[in-house]
Image (cartoon, rainbow, N blue to C red; front, side, top):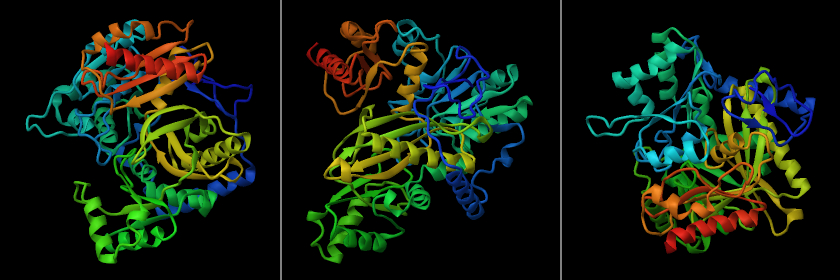
Length: 507
């Protein structure tokens, strides 16, 4: 895998494959040098973590011919997020099509959601990407949703289709939104029956589960960066502990949040304004909190995370990394983006390139690289991002708090990688990521939306302006827009996105 870097330094990254042939463009935007003392400390911490959790990065069960990696051979791409707690079942996620942004002409997208051929044609014809190969997974006979990888294992017709790909070319890659146990099991069965090496573009499943657990991540951050590197955070393994932590924190802080630690985004977030609860009796607070978390319609409600919600937020940086195998060099910082969120639960609705002052930019990069290096030492491979907030009354006194890790693809990394694929030679233009799902405009077929927005659509790499759709989701129901807006500056890009919305609204 070749890497384009802004300077001549390579940081040990190997440049063995041309940009034309690399399967995912990885473009470094920051060079971060860590001292030997820091590197040695990270090695010690990783050894301690692996002593406590010896199965964390083990993958022997899946066989010698299944391992983490990313090859040039065809990818089998799965965009299913249903194995993340509280997210929509397979086939019902409106954003599943975003994974198509990673596909090349030789790859196969395994899709559980309904196909949208207009969107597929848009990617191929208007954006100049190769024609997509899409295999639609039929619904289960029982009508019960199952993870897409599990469906591929259980349905012989689907499995045989994938097996043909693996038999044809060694080192086929399973590239999934998140590398769960079902994805690794699918890789094992394909490898066993084909007698071929199968790669998984993500970490082993136990490590995947851990890094996406907000409680685990908070403890790692405090171990690596110190107790002040996260907001005050506690784990609650039952209602009594939940009441105790909330009661204690409500005396001092303006806003708290209860989180389902292994969910994603804001789906499992329950904000609490302390002025409404701090004077409640223990009994009344207990009733209020039990009612609040009863919205988690699943059996294993606990543990829950109780965290202080940072107010006076000056920026919400999200650091996008690619973590290669240790022998291939250090983690790569591909960008720092300022996330836009919506009340009350901090729902992600978009992002722009972060503009931090030099001191905080250096701090964000250094701490993210340090965490990334630890993950690499633990056996992590693939896409990863770290989300933080910079909060305070003014910039000079602001504190940087790390909030969560996304050990998977997401709403920033997919558009970012998509743009790196389109703009292969030229410098990336300024852009804004839009991901709104609470809009209101007339529902219409995706092809009709393209006609209405023709004047605003991105047309050519030589004229990097206009909008690019990242998913057809929301357009055909009139509820949302998922797009990238380009421009000479971010203001122009945002204006383009707003004009697109007005054109859809006004007809």
